[in-house]
Length: 161
Ligand code: MG
Image (cartoon, rainbow, N blue to C red):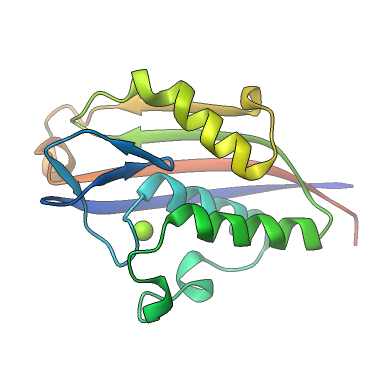
């Protein structure tokens, strides 16, 4: 077996009148993330990290935002397809570590549920997923609550060759 690391990043604009989806969870807040899909930047960064570990490009290549099939789609559905890529490669996710950068809302209380959703989707034990929330210290657009961003790293075990 060989170890493959993957890195993902995503940022979406926060706008009023949208539902806030993060980590597959609907979070009560006054604004939501703008996007062609549900705008879930944590799941998008996770998908990019997994695709990175597989050496299979990025989310935009697999799920183009010009494709009407993906309009308003739950990002968990896209994650399910990436899980299928890993299964086809006979890969296994070792662990996931994520940082969400959000000035608001405070997210820590949602982490147990988010872990449960993501672990369920990926067939992982919840202790293989670590989530962290940071503010942006009121600096720049993230600090002005104009956007939420996420960084994710994953370790995937793949058969040699
Ligand atoms: Mg995105």
